[in-house]
Length: 194
Image 1 (cartoon, one colour):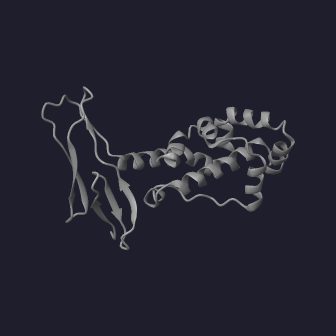
Image 2 (image 1 turned 90 degrees about the vertical axis):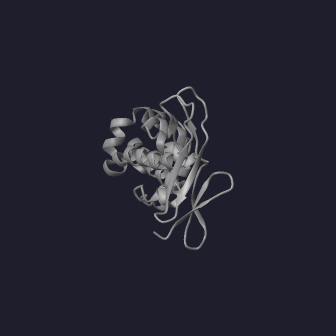
Image 3 (image 1 turned 120 degrees about the vertical axis):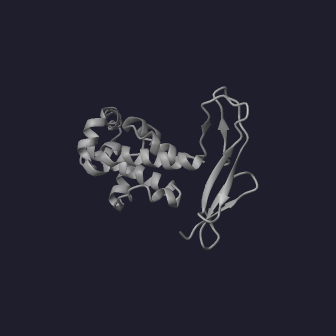
């Protein structure tokens, strides 16, 4: 409701709000058969139901055919991210302890730097610091996601200024490292998707 789909000249679709602003895009469609042959394909907009139908010319194609516009990538990846991050946001320290031996080991190695060690101590230890980092990471993912994808995700928890300062003081753990350590690759992909 209150959104419309419009064709762009390059095969993409734009999702427009009532003000006429583009709030999301659907990349140009693609289709590939089992031999890797790209098949002719296009979108049809059905105004009466405000839906999209993708047409694929399958003449001479070898089945199965893969059809995957990126709109569905966003939805699937957001769902994977939500499923992967929820245990950390709900159980906190328990999920950190269960999955984070690699990250906690990295945090403990970084503690050789006094500034970083002070930040970890003020956070309440390596597990609590890791939990703050996960929350910061999730807030970043959420901020990078299109508005309609945000509706699929849990709202992020706010970090206090003190917590944000501790994370700045203890920098050294990139979001890529964090995503790898916790199995949050879908969240990282969601935030870095162009």
